[in-house]
Image 1 (cartoon, one colour):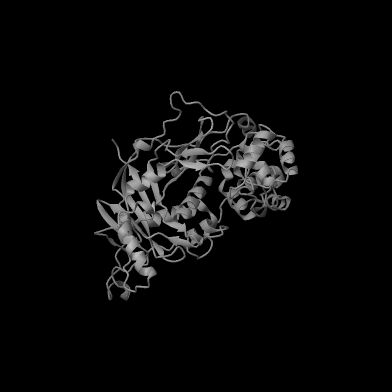
Image 2 (tube, rainbow, N blue to C red):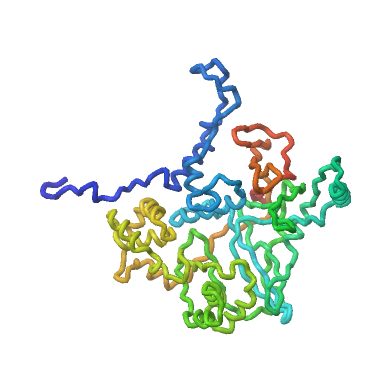
Length: 475
């Protein structure tokens, strides 16, 4: 330290080290090391061996990722509790968290990301419209009417209704091909006068493909239930026939309305501007504010008539009046990102030694949650130091990128041929109880992971899985 230059007080200098228990990348790295290092998969010693331990061989303590679970589930209405949780919902939640933390580097979830092409055909004009959306899981419906043992099922059901205590439990046998056919079936959609057919071919094939069997459903009384089915899921899969083909020769397209840009959490885009006059006009007609905002957004600010038609066509949607979160804006309720930032949270972060612009950027990136914003700002110190804030409160890079169209999602595409290497099964008869076990194929041998018990599986129940994981096979 040079003479005459006072040493900066440590109290006024923001720490560069985030709390490791609250840092997502630290917890993921910790879990990855535990799973891959082999340090926690060593056979336990026999009684009387080293250090007089009494732990029997084969009974491993294993890994209990409590810190990881607490961090990933924090703030989530389901994953922050100890209630029964859905593996598919948790996988999507974890993918979303990974993407939010990979905006400035490689994103491993790109290996699962793919595009789905949606084709809508107007039944009056026979014109078509093509759109694309991002997905990570193919959800296969279970057509119970296609069971190959329908007579046995009907007989067992008849005996149960008659009160026969000896009625056998018969599991429905559903061909995998029937599930794939149900996925590709056109369906009627739209609540307006023009009913449309839709289908969902795949526009890109990811490196790793996840397939969900939709076993959890609702009964006629709206009570959640689990379908007891057996599906002959194949070891190899060729989905080339599902490849999207786009517009067909001689096919006319519906009038083009600018669709909302495809976006994923790892890509930052600027929020579009809604036509306030159209929103107000729709509100005066008696529709909910958020529904009016949705109508204006999804019709691309094309006017009151188009927005009104959208409302009438989507008035029965379950999310009709749900808050609209615009791309590039983590807030809702009709506010812009600047307006939604809490002044109290701003002052708290500024008091820690950060600038107001840095605090604003952190709050915008974390849905205005103070604790998450503090974690975010400490994990993005290098990015914040490089910020060149302009007089308007935005960096020069942001001002330049605002004039460019938002980037599309990054996807990996290749042949649609896959081989099965893992699957997750739900053990239990109800959606409210039970637990999950995992089978993974290692060196041509199936291994079952059931909590602390890990062993070879001679006859893995591949027909009873819930989530199936495939990897691409090179031609």
